[in-house]
Length: 265
Image (cartoon, rainbow, N blue to C red; front, side, top):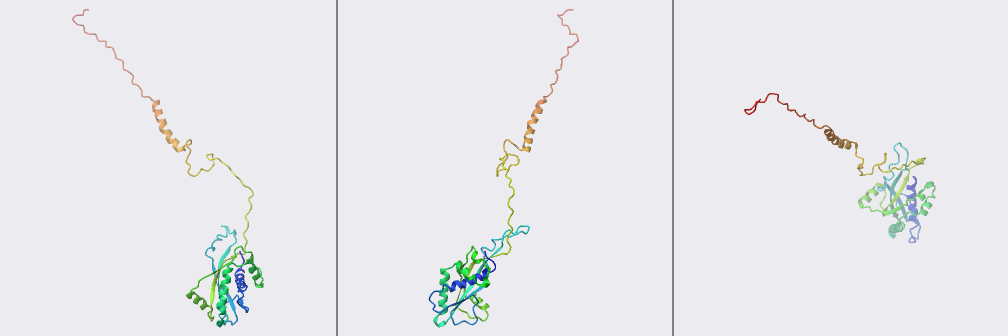
């Protein structure tokens, strides 16, 4: 994580890294300048390091969201993740192929040292216009990767450089660069009291395990009412036996019985 000076610090450190790793092939001193390609090509051996584009890093651009709570309180310091795109051009005597030799030395240096060393960062930070930069304390180191630029993209890029003749160049991408916000989040309050309740399953107020149904010995209230209704109905019917009809007594006849021929008075 770094402050707003990180972009300029990476540009200056890249120029210093190239300058210190050109090798002994060049007897004359080579100037390495962090600037755009000049309109008038210099005759002496020169390398220009031009930052022509800054883009958000697609893999880290949303990792710090959200940075604020619902009430607006800052919970995390915002950090913008960026990629830096550099155009490195070489100039020199064309008859001696100085530009091509310089480009070969640049490619070799960045291939051998693709990660920006900490000592180079500290040395570049000694410039007065980079005072206050904290790139050396960043956890994420900057890595340089060569990128491919076709003829169409190269023509558009050099077309934006008004009245600047084309020169042999290579394109590198520096990632990952973070630019931190200025505000610091408010630390959360410590826990003053912790309350722990332990309840066995099945007790009042205890949570019900997932997928567990009601206990068989404790049927629900509605089920109990439904089961009790048909059980009491036969009992009431059994308590009321049907009334028996009283037997009718046969009355004896009081009329005199007729006498036969063999009977006498």
